Length: 277
Image (cartoon, rainbow, N blue to C red):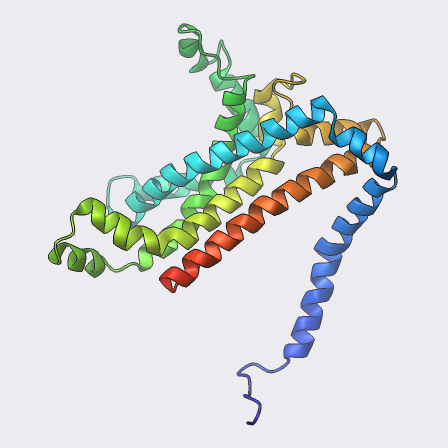
């Protein structure tokens, strides 16, 4: 059998350029981080990663990022649905506001959120009256991560939702399906890959977020101290081995999470016959 000709020639050159580019931008820097962390030996590596302060920060960073990503999935899908399926006054303004966290410097976002939700802030003062503190708590960190993560879900789900023909819903209704059955049996299976992609992007951004979190977190050790702050602190102390060790632990945990999400996304794509945009 003759070899099938490709529409666009130059596969070897394109693949070579891609591998070189990927190595220079991703693989080599990550390998350098790993090698730097291994320079302190296994005993030193283990001593750092088992430190109670680091374990608490890892728990805080990953738990708040996970919760924020889950919340963003729920409200992000609802927001994308409203933007795609309904026409209302100010729709273009709302659509533009979704991208605001992309354009706004993270430090500015952190300062603004802290000013709003601190105990004497415009919104926080009302919660303080009922003994609910938002700023300088894990709740405030989660709120900041929700703010910076919502565009990832909306912009990932929105184009896929726009490609779903309304005739599918009408056909499901004509066949006797109620609204909930139409959502769970027709619409959501098509959106699964895109939803998982948006969740993965929001989660990954939340885990490594620094600028918008340090202001509202309060940075109290064992309570509201995030892992990226610990890395910055080690770098400021010229403890490069300690900083890279913490970074490697974050990298490994994030890789496991993202690999699991990738498997779920592939499963959903095979099930629906669609791929996420």
